Amino acid sequence: MLINTERLELTNFKADYTEQFSKALNDPRIFLYLPENVPTSEEIQNIIKWFIERDKNNIKTGFKGTNLAIVLKENKDVIGWCGIQPFDPIPDKMEIFFGLAPVYWNKGYMTEAAKAVLKYGFELLNIAEIVAGVKPENIASVKVLEKVGLIFQKKLDKVPKDCEFYLGEHYYSITKTQYINKKV
Ligand SMILES: CC(C)(COP(=O)(O)OP(=O)(O)OC[C@H]1O[C@@H](n2cnc3c(N)ncnc32)[C@H](O)[C@@H]1OP(=O)(O)O)[C@@H](O)C(=O)NCCC(=O)NCCS
Image 1 (tube, rainbow, N blue to C red):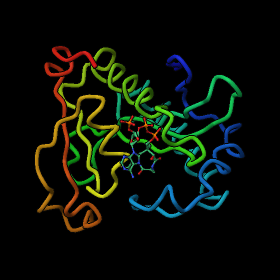
Image 2 (image 1 turned 120 degrees about the vertical axis):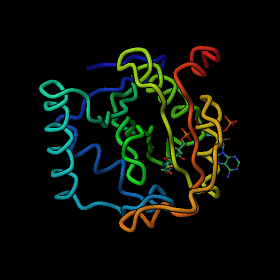
Image 3 (image 1 turned 30 degrees about the horizontal axis):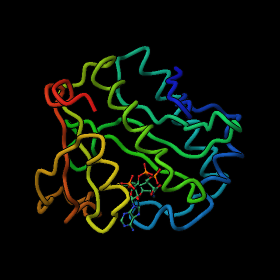
């Protein structure tokens, strides 16, 4: 799958991306508000294998989530990731998620990518509602979510035992109807 935006390509992960993706993720600032830490290259290899497997299964069994590589058209660099998958604390909801190498922050890239992810989710996958959880102090992420039309719903004050990381996060959502009416 390939989604084209003005400056980016969003594409399924390939084993070839391991080195570039490791380089992009090699910065603890990316993980400040995420449940993971900077991954080792072995962990990256394994996670990419898992992305590829999940994408194959999407074809066989129906969509269960995808994590797309963000490739900068101008230099073909893998600069981040974004996608849609079940939201861990409320797994019957589909979440939008994303991250970018810090050297590329604040250039509007994630807003551009996130708009394309919503279009994919609503127009191609026909998902009824897309949600997100974000630490309120993660201002850049809050801004991206709001710029693409997600709306604050509530603070997550109850989460399953194995999802305590998400406690206190701000929960955002946009329905397909809101998306159509807004067309961000
Ligand atoms: C969140 C993230 C993907 C944003 O990517 P990005 O390409 O820099 O986002 P954009 O440039 O499209 O938009 C960021 C917005 O936040 C604003 N911003 C960033 N830091 C800010 C700060 N400290 N205070 C106020 N505004 C800030 C930018 O000015 C921009 O808004 P604007 O377009 O109105 O000027 C990036 O910061 C990232 O990878 N963070 C680490 C991973 C992460 O936290 N993912 C989300 C988990 S919920």
